[in-house]
Length: 286
Image (cartoon, rainbow, N blue to C red; front, side):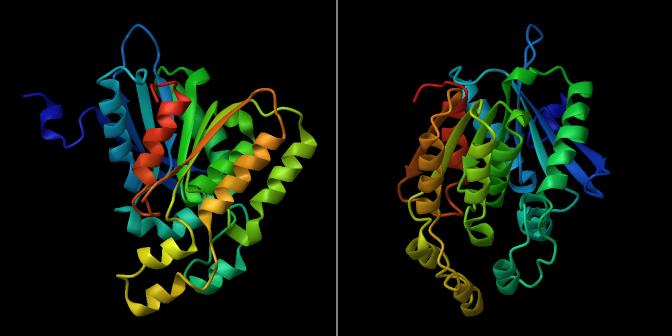
């Protein structure tokens, strides 16, 4: 019996990588998906790996059954913790470009914010070289997928350091962060450059508007339900606004598409966001 038969997720690895930029240790998940010796695989970096890595690997492998995706190395960026619910504080630290006083008021335990520049430096200076030194990958076919605050981070990278990845899957981005400050980043990006060479897909659930957030929270305890109404957040409108802004710049090398997925809420849509992103980013049938 092969060792894969004893694993719930075959052909995967776990490593620990210390970041001098962030001052913390990351849990790096690696999944080998349909790799062949003849050509190096594409590489997909996935944020929130404590909650997204296993599903990302399985989504890729199912799509590969009908050759919709090329051989791929899935690299999940996570933490030395358990499931996704244990990572909420540190992900707010790493995925956010600024401090949001309104968010801190609603979630007073989240004292660490604004670490996106350091987290980006970790990816560019420490993680990517580590991956390329250990695995044979096609660096011209690199992609990043982030959901929620991870989608905010992906948008931040796209607008400040677009050459970090070739492709960006941006799921349900938290563009409401710190008074919609990411739209200021978009304006500064447009002032600084006349092209944005990237392939980008935005996806969001149709019920990720203010009313949908109230329904999504309806089974939570009363004090938790109340938090959903403290700030007016319409992630559908925000996503559509960002897509329209980027399209309006007429960047020659920007390939951009988006979708609003019907009947989906913030905690139900992440896997559909990833699947639809992969189909667009890697030219699968749509």
